Length: 115
Image (cartoon, rainbow, N blue to C red; front, side, top):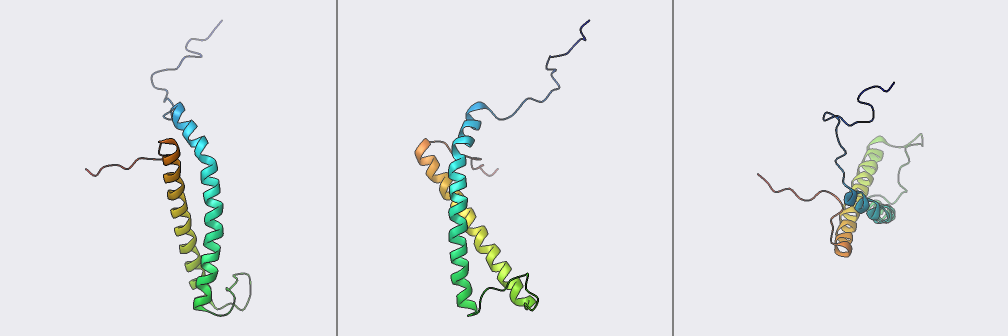
């Protein structure tokens, strides 16, 4: 004997919100995102190294070393984080703009208009 309601989708069951074309856009954009992330890492590292040389002529403080001065370590970590975050954000946005030029579709959320 079969139980009632099995295999049926009830009106209360939430349906997926992502449609087919949006999934395809996300899959097509994945290589752009990966390449942009790798490039942002390389550029961010070089920018940080050059910036640190302007601040201090010694090497970047390493958190694993025992005798590191805390203020210098904190400054290096803050600077490194800011540079990496900026590089990643700029490369991510740039790769989305490039993808838009190639495909005509923006891979992500569209800008919402203020109310």
